[in-house]
Length: 192
Image 1: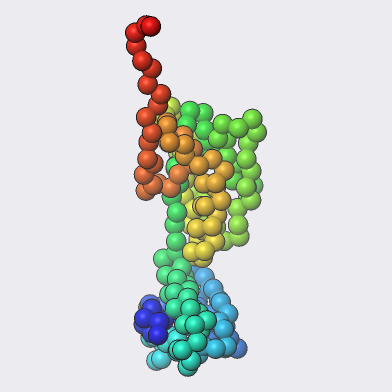
Image 2: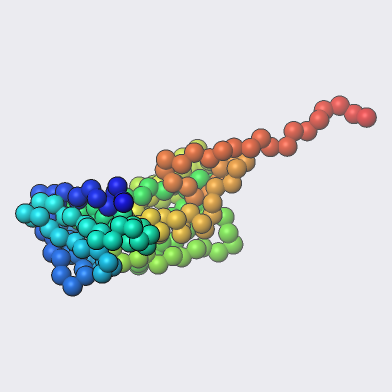
């Protein structure tokens, strides 16, 4: 019995939900999204205000897993077409920068070459501070999209280019991420 799967999903004002042929299509102010769901589940819309996901065979483990996952994906689509999702990232390090060039995100993060990453379809990049100023003021940018999975995966891929190191904190990190710092080497004074 999935506790998450049993909770109905409320349909926000201005959002239209259609269920047909094992797919759920959600249309809202920001656009439309759709997902397919497994035939072992039943999805229905009650009065245009709630989406109910039912699991006729709750004793089957795979069905229980899909029940909660399907409900979470539909709830994420509701938020995506109304408010959208955003991930904010920061780049620390002297001389590091970020640019949006013709559908590619160009990162200068201390390598001998610049790193170019194609921006996925539906993701918008907003650059607040393009280049770092010393080690104190980071370069800041944000990623926004309707699809939570796409924006989170792209943010993770960007962070993997240069993860923050523990001594000075240089690298790419999420805006709300805390980096555990290590103490550097301590030199002993005095002679032998």
